[in-house]
Picture (cartoon, helix red, strand yellow):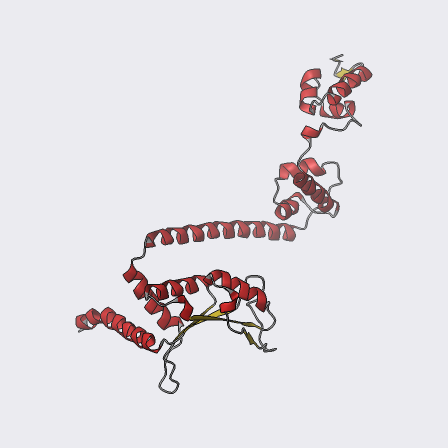
Length: 290
């Protein structure tokens, strides 16, 4: 059965045994070890035409990758390009496409561009991991918020983002507009701290006329945990054809306007609180100046 002078004898006998083992569910590795066949070409010839056992087949996702790799190889793609496109190893690609013709040698300039692209993609991934680690560490530094922390934060937040009274346009009421759901939740938590009843808060969506206003209303209703019946009529912003809009896509929900009814007195207190914060923050600085 074994070889003499480097040749294998009784090929048909070997094939009969190899086929029987294949049909019994053995992998090529097991058949190789069983028959002491260490020539891969001969091993494949012995089981030619026999399908592999089901348990050796790769999952469908792997099969799809294999087929896509073969398509790209037939289009003349190199291993590097296929790896960058599909994200699989060169070893796997080599196994999948080894029977296909080799593409023409790639232009050195193209090879340099691909190498630069891979280095940049790696650098971007490293930067993103660093960015996320920094943000997570900073979030942990905050810890729990006391009532006073929330009170001061809310006053500063309102004075930065809320509507303000002007001598030429009296607007002594609490009205807050923002597109950031985190800002909206923080503002509502601040109102709760001030014991402002939610029944006094009115909601209204402002969004571009080309966006899905109904979906935006559902989104904001979920953020503030209110029924859509609590929302006023949505304001649609007209499109300026000379403006290139950036706020598009599924993540665009417009802005939410929150207005507190009968809030003139609260507005005056907020303004006073703000000036108190400014005075307390700058008093020591003024004393230390020469």
